[in-house]
Each structure stands twice: as structure tokens, then as C-alpha cells.
Length: 340
Image (cartoon, rainbow, N blue to C red; front, side, top):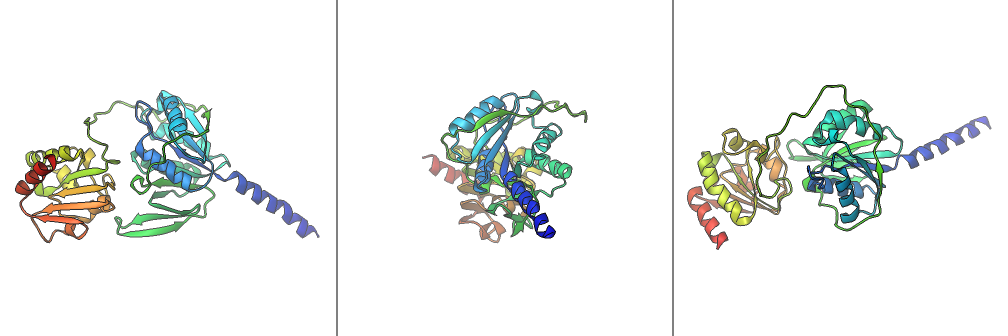
């Protein structure tokens, strides 16, 4: 009789814990002006696929503008709360500043999942949160099977691993190119203030940034990309061939690591395993042999066009269309015809 009665509170306790652990916290990155980034709209879509109520965390001086955008321009039925941390200390997403706030929120029994884009911010914050909470992060997922099971690439994208996570809290970063943006619309999410946190005692401070500014589409979310590799030989040829073609297509410009290391372009344009991962509708590879590290960053593109003078180049194995010949003749002719 005693043994039966003693089990009842245990069952009730587990049920109550399950009910509490049923929400998702999504971290939302914003531009300096407070506009929600495309990668975070993808993260919000991933959070929505889990089916749990969602709390979105926005931080920085312009967090109020981001919260209004989330509530008035985003159609997300599961979004029921927007947590706003309006504090200039969060403006540049320093992980030493963000981690204590995210950790404090996740200590609550309310959240079962934490979702962030696999951006530089996400890659900085997620391991720190995992270390402080003693949970193993699940990084760079490309598919959500269910609330406990996820798919992520391994071996430079040559294999996909299906991972089942038994942890009470799942700390997840998503590959933005694998999840479309959340739909536009509106919702009735409640806007609340984040808890106040003490200033970091680590002595980290923001000194400044030197950024390459241009009017081209953002490389991570562009629908068209023209990319150059080692076969372009030098910076002058890169600019003479790649830039006009990208202009004619209103496309973003990318590059291989070899091209970046050789000084053809800025390292912010690097695509590959150690650069950005992209999945545009159209990817034009000029003078790119197709090393496995580069393919890991672009092989999910909808249509791949390869231009190379080596018919045995590995890039042709993944290309939908291939042009074999002299880059200095093919690319200007292609640019001219597209412009017309």
C-alpha cells in the first residue's frame, strides 16, 4: 500500500515538469538599426517547427524597434512572448555580455529548447551557455525530425547524422540556408522586459569594427551568387570578370578560401567549410576547382553553373550546367548577353 501511494507524487511531479519544460527560447539577431536579420527569421521558423510556445529574445539599443517588427510583420502562431533587453551593452553581441542573460533565462523550468542561428554570434554564445548549464549543444542542424531528434551534417557535409537528444534542455544552432524565413504577417505576442543583469566582470569591451560596405545583397541570404576561385589568377582578373557578371545579375559576390588567401577579395566573402554556408537559387562558380571544403559551403544551391578550363575539375560533378573553356572569353561574353 505504501509503495503504490509513494509512486503517485512522483508521476504527478514528472507530468508537471514536462508541462513546464515545453517552451522554446529563440535568440533574434538584429542590425544596428534594429531590423531583424534574415538568419534569425530562419531561426524563428525552425523554432516554430518544434510546435512549442516561443519566446523571442531581442537585445540592444534598438531592441524596441525589433520587437515591434516581430509583432507586426511576422506571422508566427506559436510566438507568444517577446523579451526585450534594451541595453547598449548588448549592441555588438559580445558573448561575454550575452551569455549571462541567456543563461539566466534558460535556468528557468519554462524552456525545453534554445534556438539560435549558426552565425558568428551563435557560434560564440552557444558553447558558453552549454558549459555554464552543463548541456551538450547540437550545432548546425539542417532538419527537425521531432522535438528530440535532429539532422546535422558531418564530415564537411558528406554525410548527415540523425541525432536524438535525451537532455531536458536542447541547445540548438540552425543552418539558416536549410530553413526558409518565417512568413510575413502579424501576431499577438506579449512584449516584456528582460531581467536586469550585472555588468560583466571579465573586462571585455568593444573597441570598434572595420567593415566592408557595399550595396550588394547579403551573402548569407542572397538568391544569386557569383563566386571566384584560384583560377582567376589575381585580384585584377577577379574584379574584371566577377564584378561585372554579379552586377548584371544583381548578385552577391563570393570566393573560395584560396582566392581570399591570395588577396583577390575580402575574407568576409569566403564560402566553404571555414567560411559562409549558402544555398542560393543560382550559384555561378568561376575558376573554382571544387575542393571538398568549398563544396561543403555551396552544394545545396538550387542551380550550380561551373565555368572552368579543366574538364576534370571536381566542381563539374555537382554542377547542373558546365562551361569548359577560357574564363577570359566566356565570362565577358556571358556578362554581355545577360546585360542585353
